[in-house]
Amino acid sequence: MAKKSLFEWLTGGGEADTFDEIESGGASYGAPAATQKRSLPVEQIEAEEEAGELSVDVYQTPTHIIIKAMIAGVRPEDLDVSITRDLVTIRGKRERHTEGTAGDFFFQELYWGSFARTITLPQEVEIEDAEASEKHGLLIIRLPKLDKGRQAKLKVKSN
Image 1 (tube, rainbow, N blue to C red):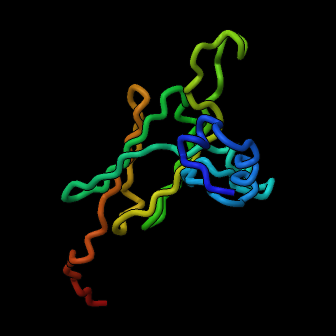
Image 2: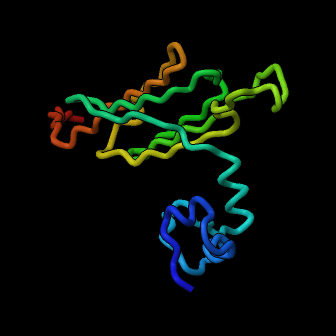
């Protein structure tokens, strides 16, 4: 059987069994990888549906690493921010507050439910001096950089 062009595959021209072959991992027929069905264990599928990934901006100033995330609709007490010297994990849950049924919506694009994000930091930070604040739905985490070159003079005491 000759391979279909992408246009033929998308429009359904030619033989009808080619989509089944793509789904089962057979011949690709020019289909983009993103359209091919992937097989995942049930536990992994449930985990993916369970928690969405939070979008973040991470940047640095001369003294801090700053993380910003939109958390509109999430109360600060419903957030869990965990920090180590080189990782930050943000977890939370956005509760659904809708007035209507699925058939009443024209678009339904907002994310509702649990979310989490773990960020590997580009350098170590002072976790004791870290600060987190929320204003108008924007979470801002300020992490002071660990100054490895900093020196301190110790005064020797006589006993």
